Length: 197
Image (cartoon, rainbow, N blue to C red; front, side):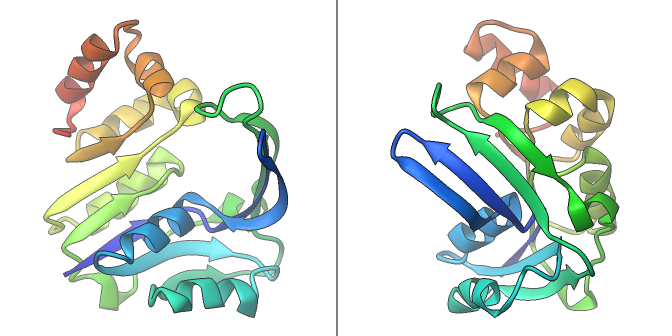
């Protein structure tokens, strides 16, 4: 049993009431793959720049995450800077630098083709859909999104939702996606879009 995740492997600078950390290894695919590795074999598809070195690779290796699908490109990795000072449930974006992520075209290694599970982490819905279509035999498909994709790329996101079994989304994003103020009504509306959970 294995799960493939496609998403960002990045560096973040984050400030919370507990403190500030500079250029930490981050990204949706990083967080997902490290967490999932406690339960199953994980395969990751992402792109990184020259600033992703042996120290960052060791983090994945320590959890036995298969990084065959990580593309290494000339330039810098995706970088995001944000603050959770006002609300721990909502990030305030201060700076985003796409860098090598701007031209990311997910490539699925042949060794990943037998993955039973697929997670489409928080990236452009167009890319999420391409990976979903390239892995039609996955038994269970989960996905993630955020306010940026909901606000500026909703039609493409709605297409992705049709192919998801599970959607991870917070309450603010749920209301934004559906236009419903009640979280119960908003959740019901999302079920009509495709996800079952």
